[in-house]
Image 1 (tube, rainbow, N blue to C red):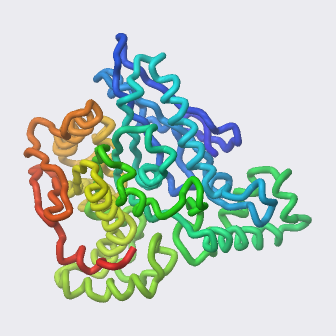
Image 2: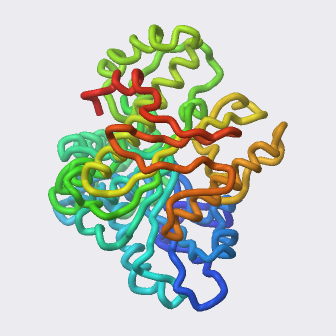
Length: 420
């Protein structure tokens, strides 16, 4: 786990902490609990971008929470080290629940309202937020959620989790003088070194993930949400139009490999991807690849969460960020993480036409703030944001000229029906 000042993070097992920013005054104030991203292996709760000062000045308590990462948070050691370690693939999820329980019991001391807790995150933080929506024992710990580029698919079956654990153990046991039992006394940096070797060779993107353990996660989170675990709760959820541009690299033509995919086997993905060229004949191979990988990893999983929340009796508002970066190596793309600076009042100022990003950023921040305060998401300059329902899938596209679309990307979405 990383700790430090946000510029020079260091590795430490002393990682289970949280940070609190509280408004002046007696409250009661709503609380916004932020789960950081980082692919389940990186990131930290002290990122300067998610400093809670601005939200606190606007009447919101901000809590950023840390959790165990990598094999410490997402690997089932039960078969390797004994029954007492069974289910350790959900250690990170348990850390988040423990933090939410602390917030429930202590937020009033900071002027907070324990009955108005919003949990949110981006990327891995959004995926964990969406998974929490499907944890029955966590239902009472939050009242609404914000999911930026998430999805609830990042869970493993028991057999899948054990296969990953076995693969990690194979790499560990190749080290001189290493045995499975030596994991209990090993230097954590040595474990992380082997973790990275293992992940580089494993034929799947993000092999470390939460596990269906029969207790904390009794079934797929999306099924639990669909049957009413979030009934009466509110959800703000969305994605960015070209999420995967951040990871795709400079090559215009290259094949998609299994290591690019987070949710589907390669052969299943290829059955869909082969249809993208006819659907988008004017796109370059690189644009087609980004579009399809974005759908597989972020957009379709987020649509599935929105559909399930609607079916299960929750209220949902869906967005898609279409605003494209105006400078730098990702110019022209609405890439993964671009919205974070807007949400937290820190848009990019070092790009051409930065005023456009600043203006949209103010609207995005205001809409999120409105939602956290318990209102519908709204801001001056944005059109009225209708509630998402599966029959219409109303989505607010965020751009210099934002607009509401019904059933956006419908033909593309239908390509994925029956998958994920």
